[in-house]
Amino acid sequence: MRFASAKLVVLSAALLLVAACGGSPTQPSPVQPTQTLPTLQSLGSATARPLSKTTYVAFGDSITQGTITMFNGLLQLVVNPVSYPYKLQNLLQTEHSDQRIHVYNEGVQGEATGTGSQEWGITRLPGVLDADNPQVLLLLEGVNDLDGLGSAGIQPTIQNLQTMIQDAQARGITVLLGTLLAQRPGGYRAISINLVQPFNQQLEVMAASMGVTVVDFYTPFSQDLSLLGPDGLHPNADGYTKMAQIWQNAIDTAFEEPLPTPAHPNGTH
Picture 1 (spheres, one colour):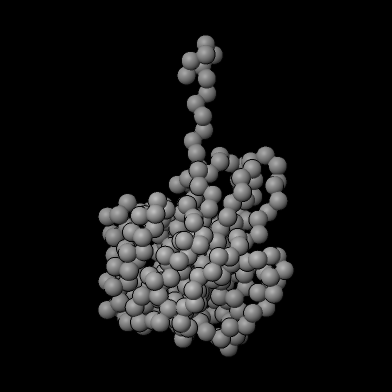
Picture 2 (tube, helix red, strand yellow):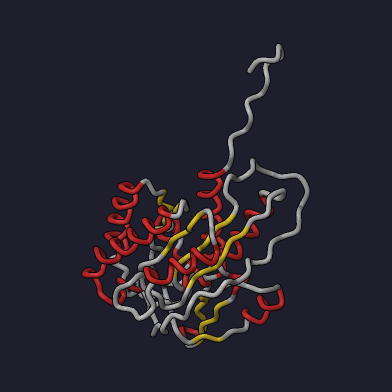
């Protein structure tokens, strides 16, 4: 989902949803061209080296879309200003204030990569890339596959993500691949808690074979489980802020342009 205006963001913040990240998915509708998240106004001189890439698509499930669990799971909200793509754009725009940064939120609640779900990321991604035409794909998906299939879903999900990466790379799009977040023991949606680490290990092997940078979300969340909401799966507001910061660091590392070599006093370098 993307946002037409600040007014729509406010309206979207009140949207009540009853499905969880692993809830009953709906049949995907055709991807329609949408608008970018609102950007901050220029804050003056840049505070960091310029980015070589400025257009990003955040693709995934409800953790990308921005689901917040409340009241012991009786109520869930998708709150756009809380989502990590929204926060990431504001962080990048503030840091690189002389550039125009676009971060598209293409998260869909309940989506699996392509196994055990009617809504498949592997079939949705091409239309998203056509509509948004990003330079970078931020890909984080797979927990719903594991919830549906258990350990038998690990390898098919890795293969689906590999296909999605190949699709992006064939278009000249750089991929940053996120690991699955840690889950909190006892959380009522921490269904795949024992599968996350084995999945992430295979994810890293696959990514290395394709020359893709892996962005580690598991370690920070395993070290601070207070970043997760009451269901033990979805981040809370602080957790989404942490995710945005992690993506920001990965983007700066990958795409900040080097400083120019200073000229020698005699005119040579």
